[in-house]
Length: 271
Image (tube, rainbow, N blue to C red; front, side, top):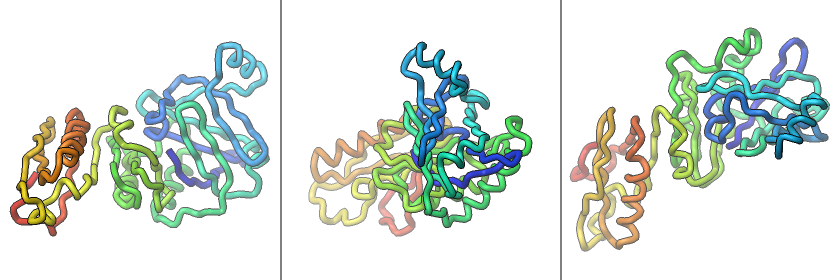
């Protein structure tokens, strides 16, 4: 999980603010203990190895606790130690993993409009935190699967949602949270909605004339918010298996978003 953010300020001190699904998706929950280390060139948050290290970190005033709420955990660091470690950088690249969070300075500036939107929200949060969230009321936690551009993710974030993109490729716009990994590992993280750009090789009628053995319906996915039928043009058993794997993976999601191109064949069934 990565994103480039700007170092904020509060009470004339440097501030780093992390909130929401970016933490939950990596297993960081309200009440979790972690150790904050301010090293030369980087800031590291890591989980204690055992109770002994927890007690030692507490005595050395390095022990921190994830705050916020169960639905919106927050890691809020407000100290000049940030600048002493990072240096003169205004922006930092944040990498969140299950056991540690690494923060390093970067010259890269997010060029997306979403950066300005988020900056304003974080500045407001800095004034009255921890009573406020950077997300709008009734916002949703949304996973945008199979997207590297960040365009859909950014538009959802502009609307006030907690949106994260995921793809095997790194994002071309680091102004929003992005997971570079297999999306199937992250489907069980209590998303309110998933928008998935399915592999078009197996889910459209494009070039269907090249497949001699014709179309085959793979599976229907039903949910409380609607249903969709996925079709695969069977060329080999491996193609069929991939389509079924995708459908089965998303079967349990309550909110399913299916984005369909207008350039598909007229024979394709509407979702």
